[in-house]
Image (tube, rainbow, N blue to C red; front, top):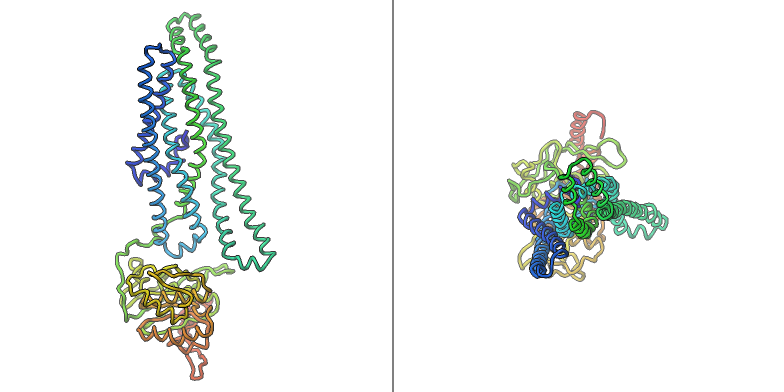
Length: 599
């Protein structure tokens, strides 16, 4: 029987999910499946009557049999098609809504979830749900057949139906005991998926490191990948094995039921009738003898045999349905929180200010750095960026440069303080519009294979000019906004990312260690040609850099140290000197807030 019949909580999420998407398709498909089940039971009834009918009555029963066969075929096909359409519609909507939800979820929340878990949900869980919905037509049609057969058995004999229902209840009870072990195994299988995806990601992204270090490669294969794969296999075999045991136990119970009806029931019937005759209850004796007639026993045996095939299908589909329910719960367990989800359509959108100051006042952000027990606090920061200004951020690893960059572009929201663009305060309502003011090339950038979001036939010609300037025209062509190849070195890919940022033409630009992978010639082009060109266009440019030989290009160099900002100036000989007054002011601000305890 369907698992959601036996356990109201099992499968309920999936059914509610279906109802939310298309209630009419589900209702029509279930109605068609129920009609098919009743028609199947009707066929058994006709067969049973034909076995007892005379020759002159067989012709009429034959026409009824043919009509029921046609109706059964139509009902099964209709139900299967409707549920297949419903399942595919649900999977389509689920994939799109999941992708939209990911894009709307805040960046810190996405960092907590991690790429492996998200990718596993988008691929493994959605595929598992799709497989479960593929089984739903068969499960619903066969469940309807079982229901129709039970109704027919009740019409034949209410006493025997009680016996059948007792066997079913006993089977369900024993099945539930086995099912709990099976579900635990299937849940552990799903947990193992996340670990396997993480290891597969390490396998593909860490290929060079694994190739160069044989002990690391062997340890990764045996201690990580092989161990996770063994865990997956163990849990899968355990979970599925218990379901196989449950299914075969259910079939055995029905064989025992047929044996009881054929071989034990006549003896029980005679004993009960004799007892009724002994005590003088002739009416009860007659009732017992009339209730369990040979044709009724034959009808029960035929019906139970007919039920065994759909029951076998139901048992085979239970693990698939269970995995689909687990996958759905796993998707829901991503924990999309309305507090962590950004507005799909911002109520207010900031316009593109071509000449507006960007001002940070008392901005702080805390996070946990690797190897430290206590959270590290960046700030409080007071900073103003002016149009047509090139500002360098410098500092050691872990000083907070990238975190400050993420605050600037709006991917992080400040825990305290405020950010203003011009006179407009940046809040959760308009942060999406605020982010649209920035073009950025991060150190861990991703390069799409086409110029998504751009329009106009002149785009290819403009991009070609940048390709020539960046000396990529011999490697890459752009046709209809699509790059001919991305099979490039890291430095060349960064140049393509820089091209995309230039074409976006935003008021603010952020470059996070852009020159780190470039040849000296391209470093010079970047610092002495491209940055001044952006400045001449009135852009505000923020550069995270360690290239001290080019610090003189910046209008200001800001050093991040211990979570605080201090400004350094360029001497006449190109050397740097600390400006003591701002540094002392920031230190006084820090000590006033936190005392002498440095985060």
